[in-house]
Amino acid sequence: MKQEIIGNTVRRRIQEAVQNTSDLSSSESADVAFHMTDWLGDLDSLLQLYSSPEHYSDKEVHRLLVNFLVHVPNHVAAAAALLADFPVSDIFQVGAVRHE
Image 1 (cartoon, rainbow, N blue to C red):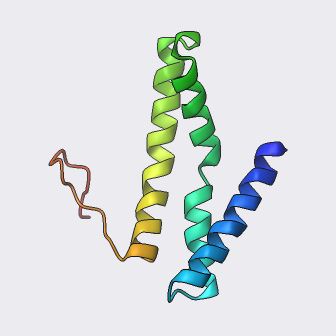
Image 2 (image 1 turned 60 degrees about the horizontal axis):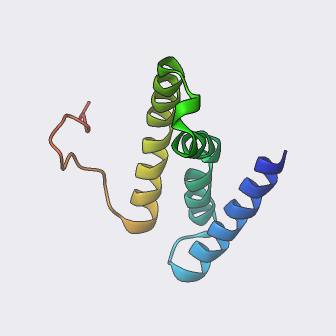
């Protein structure tokens, strides 16, 4: 419950700041805020791992990383496109961006 309250507070604050500092519409600002907060649970899990890595088994670390990597990047990419008009590219040349 506490995480949900924090997430809602952060989401509202991001939306307000984006609305006040960009040319984005209210709806687009809300989208940016959504994309920057939908994964706060994933961030919390990652921070817990980083704070106490010795408390996690190899399988738990792997599961946590996969969950983070599957969920977060597309949200960050969407926010970058909306707010900064900056598309994702494969700067490390590892096949990170696939054109379908």
